[in-house]
Image 1 (spheres, rainbow, N blue to C red):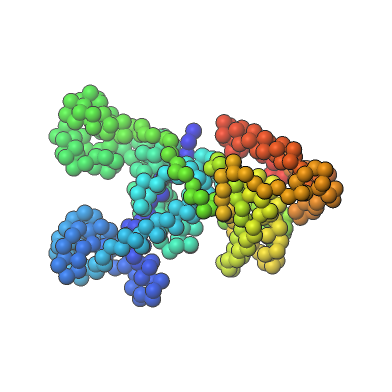
Image 2: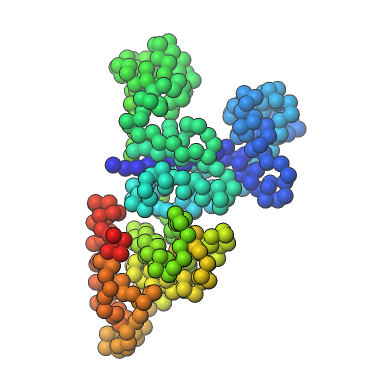
Length: 424
């Protein structure tokens, strides 16, 4: 069963304008006063593109003429739109969400669907995962989002429209009667004003009324749109997220820890999990990384990072893990750690030819033994193993085949189907 998130920025244009103003020293916060983003202040032309919650209390609606909004609230504050700024904030948001999963479908500048199924094993519940994302967005960028959770995109979107702002809501099929069917039919996705008027004439006032109506009757009055609305009222929607190709400039993942970690052993487990995630995403995108960086956020929210050029491009979990541990050991100053992140960059296609060194040739490589990160060898089962010399070309091919096999198993049976022994 899929778990889909719908992530929607609260009053995006107004929020992003407010955050930018506050960055530049503004004493007011547009989100806390009657304010809108709209047309020209002098001529009062144009329509309302976004409104604050205080403005909503005056009955101001998105899409209505600015002149109407000023009649409802004469002391209304209005700012012009800045679409270049909005695109930049949108890019930052999507870039952040990609640190969790590449399975994201952006449907507008301020909303997207995210397939949580593949990363569900990392969290105790979908709600816990959504709360982390929501809180991280506010902490990193200063604006809020609503996140709706369900088994398909339609119900996830309906859930995200429940109480705002800065909320997480679920709307699973078994919750529809209690949470959705009691709502006015006008609240249903794609139920426009003219359709709602027709439904009212048929004495259909709630989404529940619509769900229990004979779809043939709806088709008679609203044609195919009537059938679609009936399906939506019954929670039938697309469960597949059409993910866009991750940007070639980098793939990464980070996690905020449930409690601060204070030992290298604890850090090693987290870095291994992150390396597996980044490696899998690189392989899915058919990319290899030339650069790797590690980010640490300490208990006092101080953030530091360190990056290094890789010896050769890679998408191997083991290579990424070894490099990440090395970077962590150089970076960590002993203080409690609240967040860890790994990010790859300078990506190239995995089929691009690579330069070999003499140490990659079995006859010429040194038979020196390489110590594992934190003094432990890492095997597929997580057990201590004999320390091995640098991997030869055949060894690397074996690792590639192993990675491909594990990717296929996880794709078919879920990311939790195969785990390292150290995670048990």
